[in-house]
Length: 191
Image (cartoon, rainbow, N blue to C red; front, side):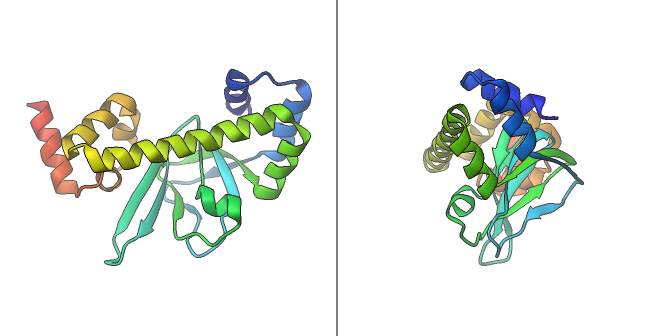
């Protein structure tokens, strides 16, 4: 189960057996069923998750009580409420398994331990955080500058597997529209 994580790390920085052993020691394998909230809002996120298989999302409830999906991720990716996890603050977001998920998880304390003991793992951790910042910046620009149809087409090009594995209402929310609008856009594209 750790092989996907080790492969991703080694694609970004050379790692030794010592580094690999740290990952195996500190990243705990877990299996969760579909629709399981693994990090609920109102608490400090306990874990950073590496997705081995399955699809996860971040969401919150708006003032009307509706779910707003802010992030959808699939393998090989990391997911948590990052800033709250790093800062040890109470999160207003939920982390949920959209499908059954095989995950590797690590606590903030253990993440700090492995990044102090291993320069390659520290560098990789920085890279993951940079990727998260870049993704969020790009997503904000897309929501501000692209039409709903353009956002859907971009998702279709960059992450088509999401469209086949994640319920339509989550995708619509993630793209900043309602499910009816997304259905209309999909019908127009198919024509």
